[in-house]
Image (cartoon, rainbow, N blue to C red; front, top):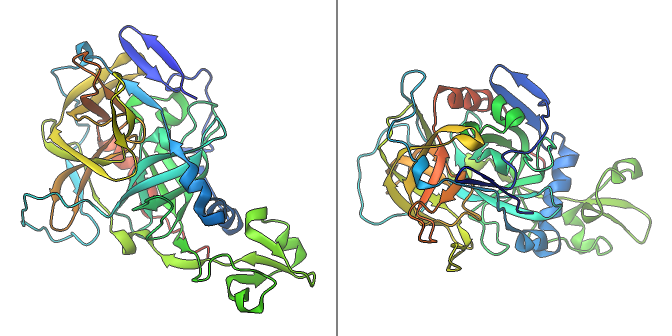
Length: 394
């Protein structure tokens, strides 16, 4: 599905400049809010899609290849202007600051993959992280990992977050997206400076101990719940079964609990000075331009460096920040940039999300990742999402 557009030394891939504008479903000021799976039945169908047949759809998904390339001459020496006072939101469980230090890098439990159906109707994934919120149910990632910038449909289909995902394993469950929030300018104009999103998720769901089971075996009926024919018809084939005796059943998940209770949630920092050191955590995949296949995308990786100012006017991105990183673009989209990362607690403050990678010295190796600058308008989008309850779908 990769599409490349060249403009004055900048290459924008997979749709940040899609033609045509679509109004968001809801907009309040600078915030655009759009539903994902907004009913329990819809959410259970989404979870079943990804978990059916031993999670075959999770295993078969490929990294999303929306990426933005910024060349060296577009790296600026100035810095994005903070639009209000600097601020931070503490991480879950880290409301009291810790000063412990360690030389080893302990990877955060909050990171994982988001899975969805792309505009090409194929199954894809990006990187994302759990973040602090009132109901411990919020995920942060790149806006292009939630909003469909290729077909101009509002949001990507069948959106779920799986923290700690590895080869079909879902150690803390699958969290179905309920509602997505981004900046109005990204939803409508695909403004690269606003390429971020926050998504509220339902409680996670898991398989019962016996898996799907067999509806015709009495010993397996604990995995199913009997429903009326009318209700049965509202479920997709991977969620429903009909017994030999003519009764109607749907599969019954186990409630895995709230996201933040299971893996924690990073804090948030905005209006920070450019030049602070950050850890970048993500699942890079694919090769460098020279063909070197550096990352498999199977395990969480990290890089570290100080941020610097960047811009890319051709994709309406004038206030980006960059960090030196060898991450390849596929899969790393949505990677979390954490300032003040506390190694012992595996917590810090989210201060960026990867929206693309760059080869700034033209040696055919990616050496820089870029993110929108987190300012007060980002905090406004976060504030619209952080106090909303989702609940259980089990």
